[in-house]
Image (cartoon, rainbow, N blue to C red; front, side, top):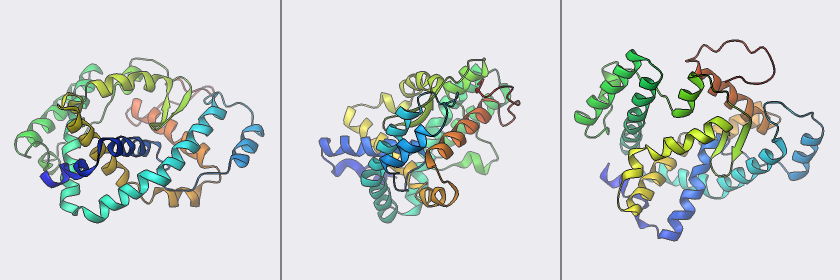
Amino acid sequence: MQAALRFPTTLSRKRLALVLAGVLSVLIGVSTAHAQAPSQIQAQTQSTTVNPKDPFESFNRSVFEFNDRLDQSITKPIAQTYVKVTPDLVQTGVRNFFGNLSDMWSTVNNALQLKPASTAESLARVGVNTILGLGGVIDWATKMELNKHPEDFGQTLGYWGMGSGPYLVLPLLGPSTLRDTGAMALDLKTSPVSRVRPAENRYELTALNLVDKRAKYLDLGDQLNEVALDRYSFVRDVFLQKRRSEVFDGDPPEEDDPDLSQ
């Protein structure tokens, strides 16, 4: 684990900034396939009516293409190198460590959503993995059948009735909605990583986390190419359905109109 946490330390500050910009695009979930040609994107956009879920589609498609090209040139090669040079055991430890950090914020959001059982189980996971799992490197909680209950502040806002708003593709950060974009600021601010000092160490941990996340999706692009004629629309629809399912804990009500109410 110590060796893994030092993974980005050989990079200069300028190069580390470039790495951070690249690996952030993992969140778009469309990572490894080639971007569509601009003429194809324009033709598709002009040939369809305005989608009420995606009123900013023209802008979103442009950002989608930018993120995709950035991923192809920076993010994917870094993730491939990470997988190649990092032992599986270390990768698992890194993933567990950051998973334990996310469980901390999930505990808070489960409490805000008045879910006592999920709150207690999330808190138990944090306690077990932090104490017995060497700061979360070993996931003893899962072995003890303490289930994860991932929640973020966007889900909390949706739980209390705030609609998702328009679909947005954020530069570098990928798919989001108006609601989730606003909530993201609090998610990032409350992350334990944001309190790490000095700043260089915080950037290194952030880069390591995002590289590890990207590494999990190395095969996703090929799969998308096989199932989707228009990758942008496919990713958008899957993302919106997934977020709606997350807000309603896997049991969303039927939609009465084309707009997403949550």
